[in-house]
Image 1 (tube, rainbow, N blue to C red):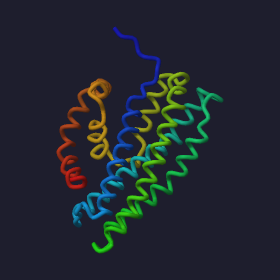
Image 2 (cartoon, rainbow, N blue to C red):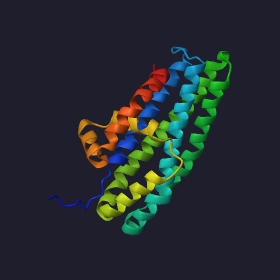
Image 3 (cartoon, rainbow, N blue to C red):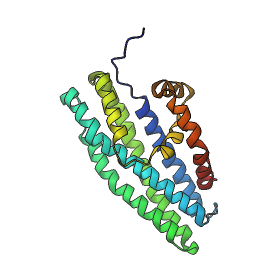
Image 4 (cartoon, rainbow, N blue to C red):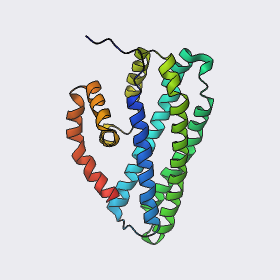
Length: 222
């Protein structure tokens, strides 16, 4: 019989970080093409793009709120002075207005006349690029500075409780948006580990959610 690990399992957090970053990069590239009039967009696609952007913004906001309210207090309680979360919390505060700017620009793109598409797409692309670059830097800092502290100081059982608390926290975009995207960026080894953690539920969810996700993805990204 295997013994339970004493090191917190950060795999799910690493893969979620990668998912958000990958989406921001490909969304920015897509909207930049729209601004250059090299990609056609109709009403249906514009609405699907706006829905995708809003789902991603909700995911990022929910993730950072969960860190502030659930994860950070646990890290501080166990790591004490070894954990300085001030910079990361400041990043969360700065990212809030960036998310609002992206949502506002996305709404303008959907509602604006077709003649204004290049200008509206250009404005949205600029806001997405700023959010992308800020989040890239924030996540790189978090994984470099805080992940080792979590692994050193926080008991695995306490981190499991953090993970469960985050999963119960309202306000995220929901599994139909999150699960297929997470599975898409995970390596085969990570997929195997995620399936081992989740049990038989994960393959069932993936099979149920992927067809609809693929339709939405093709509509948005082509």
